[in-house]
Length: 385
Image (cartoon, rainbow, N blue to C red; front, side, top):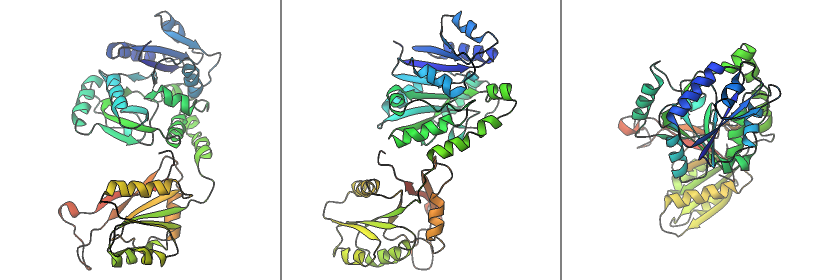
């Protein structure tokens, strides 16, 4: 049994498919190719059958999602690549994706490369050089930081874990195609799986060749965004809990709680062995629903993990993470914060806030490492993550 099944949906475009096939054979080993043909009329299925490859012929053009699902039905390998027929693979692409997927210390549903034609963080500027030469440059540039976690993978080229596929289920079958990958990635996240981008792996992608050839433009693709949103957007008003880790510093915590209480629905406080405990202060704010005075040895990672565990087990949808000496500006109102988390895109799962570090009451540092900093502070909660 091959280590990886490679599913390629086709609908005409034989010349693109041949170029993809030749690059696949040149750069890749230990795989089984599965061509799922959407009733091509240009000899595509005959070409691959003549070379001994597995071909699944569909009786009519059923679109991208349906073709992928027919391929997944015959999945045998522990890994599966979903691959467009208008791609050009580069040396080592699959070996790198497999190595990163198998060594990551968390359950990974999928990992994808960067490309000249891809959505989200996978899209990079291409210098129109030879794909292989450009891939080497990309690998060198990203060598120090090759991996990025992401909420979305474009399925022009995506390595998926077969167990994740069995867990999450088939793709949506929105004809002719569009936003199936967005929806699938959201379902992976909801089920507790994570996604990665290999920033040092480049795959060339011509892009939208089938859609433009069949429909003339991409309008048919973009209309499925409404299907995606309808499937995944929440129907209830989002609720926010603020998570504080505090130690002593009662005056600053009081000032911070006064502002935060105006903009969130609840507050949890982890008191890191304050002396005296901060319970009396916590009790004076009605929105403080949970307070814990710890006498354990200092361990910030453990303490924050405990706060997040409380939040994930709660009825709240988003968590705002603060320290006791951090104060939201008065322009942040309840409505503004809650409108923010009514995001029209379910792939957005955290928000970044700028921070000013104050040294005295009247100024903050703007030099060196103390220039305006931006950090994720508002997180969408998921009990499975």
